[in-house]
Structure formats: structure tokens, C-alpha cells
Image 1 (cartoon, chains in turn blue, purple):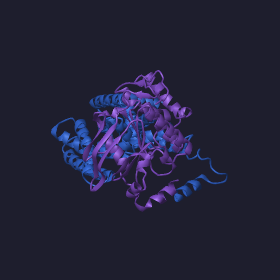
Image 2: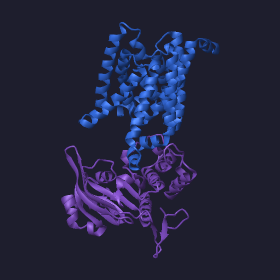
Image 3: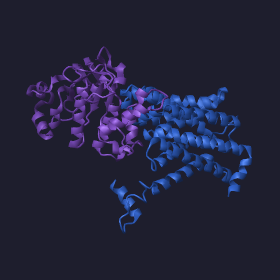
Image 4: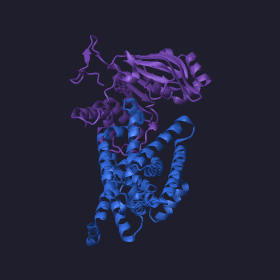
Length: 296
Length: 269
């Protein structure tokens, strides 16, 4: 089996894929943990869908598509915040409106330009980890180094802010700046992950590793560390699935990470479905869970 | 934080009557013409008051009276439409490193992956400064604060596994670790046991004796009210403020609560 896994790595494109899989699994889990604890999963989805038009416009004018995607991602969070501040529309509705509008524009633009260019919409939507270039690996490495450095340097401030934003603001921390910084980190992470998982499914790589770890450990930095291990496992496994079975890398990665989550949900020592609370004598487990759903 | 002089009370002097007076801690808060409007709703109207250090001050009033709004507007957490708030001779919002604020329990996500220790150390974030690790003295201070509220044994517990009273004590420890001059608490006694309430009031009085400003939003007019030195009675506008007995006059209570005050008192006690 080891031979089967190591043998593909003699190809240069597989080496590049491996590096980018590890980087993306790592930073998605770390940054995504902040989304999870703040209950902002939908925001991750919104930003990831919103990067598309920026990418397309950058491609049209010959600029770096990562820069274009990043600008569109940050711009979408500002649009959401602006709608929320200037109207009685709630945040989740504002997100839904903005990200579907951006996504629709992105799909339209890319469809228009892909006819006469070598750009494939599917690669951005569902990921194409085996097709990453040397330059993309370098860009991703730079982004990852920056993101991790910021998280390490601002760890205690971000912990305070994401746990108790009012208390942090009252202590004099610049909470708006911290929030904006977090949005920038999320947008950067999504842009870096675009070629690996694609914008539609990147949310899974942001949220699921952290959520899985959250079922197993109880401090934020442990959630991030264990989540990173889970994220890397999933993205590397997804890369091999994509290589051996010729499936898009995004869905392959997401299926693996979802499977890991299901395992933790069922078997977590402290809160697993099978392990806690201990089943009553003679009561079938499936029946207990269904009854629980019915009762709410 | 302590009434007994100790080596770390460097900012204090021994007054002639044996009480500790902190050099730095005895600024008062001056609120003038403070007003807050949320869209079409006037939440706070033209509030003028003085909050003295050395007293345990309660903010009371009916639901929707603007108690939390007053506290948050004083600290600049919600924008005020009008008015100024000063601590000593500068705006309070410019001196937030001197403030410790504990929000309502309902504001906090208690499933957050953090331990008691993580939460108490948050009190040292501002004093530690950007890009730095917590120092050994900071850790000792946090440990002492945790000891003071009787929660040392729970240091490594996830906060979600604590009772409401224990969670409130952890937040009190966090505020003590902040070494602030102004301590603000939003409804700290909601859903907690009598023993915790006694512990918390005792610490409030120690803080006041140390010359700190202590402001506490209180949710009822029950037995707990007797522990406050001064009261601020609010119903969108200021009804009365000053020593407790003066504020709790039947006339003031009627103006704040309407005819329902006797019912409230009976229910709360």
C-alpha cells in the first residue's frame, strides 16, 4: 500500500499537489475555527462564493487572479456590513443576497470568457488539485505563512474578541480592526484554497475540521491543532482519490472530512452518540435518536 | 482589590483612619446630558449624574429602562447621540484600559472552547500588549484573582461545564485580573445562588473600599438591593441618583415603575 501511495509522488505535479494539500488543510482548519466559534459559517460560504467575479475580472484585464478574487471577497464582506448597517435587513439575509448576486455575476463572466480562453469554470467551482502550477504553490505558501503568522501574533486578542466582543471592546481593544483582520484572513484562506477544493465546497474544509476537533478537545488552540491534522488528512486523502479515480479534488476532500466528522460525532469519548449518554438497557439506539428528534 | 496593605499595593497610601486610598483609583465619573437613540426608539434621554468612587453603585429600573444602554453608552460600546462621559479629567472612552466590564451572561456563548484559565487570562490581554506573551506576574495575578473568588480548583475546566454562579465568579476573577479603576457589571446576579451572591457583594465592597468605581446593574428590587451604597434609578430618563435610602422613596419608585412597584418588591423578595 505504501508503494501505491508513494509511487505517484515521483511526478512533479503530484509533489506540487501534496504541498498545496497540506498547506490548504492547515490554514483552512485554523482560520475556519474562528468562523465556527463565532457561528459565522454562512459568512465563510458567502465570501467563498463572492470571489468569483473578482477572479474573472482580473483574468480579463490580465491581472493576478488571486488578487482579484481576494479583493472581491473582502468587498463582499463590506457590502454585507453596509446593508446591515444602513437597512433593517438582518445579517443572514444580507449575506444570502450579496453572495448569490456575486456568485451569479462570477459564473456569468467566467462562462463568457472561457469560450475563447483556457480557463475552466469547473476547476474554480470544484477544485483541480492535480492541475496546480508552480506559481500557485508559491502563492499559497506565502499566503499560508502570512495567515499563520497573524493568527500566532494576535492569538490572545482574537481569543478575547471572538469569545466576548463587548468585554474586549470595553477593555479598549480595537474590535472593528480585529474583525476586519479576521475577514481578511478568511478571504486570503479561501483564495489560497480555490484551486484545491473549489469555491463551492471550501466551506467544508473551513468548518468541518474545526467542528470535528471541537467534539474531541476543549480549548481553541487545541481545536485548531487537531483540526489542522484532520484538515491535512482530508486534503491529502482527497488528492489521492482524485488521482486514482479521476474525480474532482474538492468533492473527494469534502467526502473524507465529512466521514471523519461523522466518526467523531458517533464515537467522541465525551459526547459521542454511541458513547454518551449510555444507552438504556434494551432500548435500540436508532429508536432513541429518532425519538429525540421528534421531541426536539 | 484588597483591603489589607500588601507589597503589590504600590499605588496606595495609608490614610489616617486606617483605610487604603489609591492614588489613581479615586477619580469620579461625570455623565452629562447623555442621550442614546436606536433608530426610532429613544433609549436614554438627557442623563446627568455623578458616580463616586468608594461606593457600590446599583443601576435599577424597570425592563427596557435603558440600564444596559446607560452602561454601554458610558463606555462607548454603543454610540451616544449626545452628551459626554468623563473619568477624572478626560473622556472615559479614552481610558478604557482602566475599565473592567462584565457583560450579561446571555451575551456569552458558553459552548465556546475555552477553559476557566483562558477566560481569566483575557483580563491580562490589554495590559500585556500586542505581540507579547503573558508574563509571569500576569499569571500570578490571574491565579490570585481565581483564588479570591474560590475557583482555583476549576482552572482547567471548560467554561461550559460550570454552573451559572461559577461562571459569574470566573468573570469576576477576570475583571479583578484587569487591575482596573472602574468595574462595571451587567446583571451579575441573574440565575445565581445565594452563596455566590454573597461572595460577589463582598468583593464589590472590597473594591469600593480600595477607592474603585463599582457600577452594577441590578435586575430586581429584592433583598440584594440592600447591599448597595448608592443607587441610580432609571426609566429612559434619570429618576433619581444618590444614597440608597433617598433614591428608594415611594415617590421615586412610583415615577419609575408606576403602580406596579409593590408587586415587584413582593415578588422579588
